[in-house]
Image (cartoon, rainbow, N blue to C red):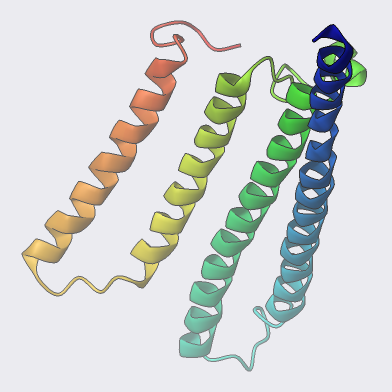
Length: 181
C-alpha cells in the first residue's frame, strides 16, 4: 500500500496549486474593478468642472449635485468590491499556497491581509461585504421618496438594522469596549 499511498498523497497535496487560477482570476477582477471605479472618478471630475459655471441654473446645479453624490457612492461601492476581491485573492493564496512574507514583515498591512485560517478570510470578507451593503443602502436611500409616515418608518428601520449590523460586527471582534488603535 505504501507504494501507491505516498505518490497519491503527494499528488493530492500538490493539487492545492489549482487555487492559483482562482487567485489570479480574483486579482484580475480586483484590478478591473479598481480600474472601472477610477475611470468613473475621472468622468465624475470631468463633468463636475461645469458645476460652478454661471450659466448653470439652480435646478441644473441641484441635478448635477444629486448625480455626483450618487456616482461617488457608486465609486465607493466599486472600490469596496475591488477590496473584497483583493482580500479574497490574497487570502486564498495564503491559505493554500504559501504565506506572503512581505505582508508579515510590513507595518502597513496591519494584519488586515494576513490570513491565518478560513475563519480569518470569512471574517475579513464579511466586514467588507457589510460595508458594501451599507453603501448600497445609502445609495438607495438617496433615491427614496418619502410620501407617507410609514415610508419614514421603513427608512428608520433600515438605518437601525445597519447600526445593529455594525455593532454586532464590532462586538464579534472582541474589541467592544476596548480602545481602538
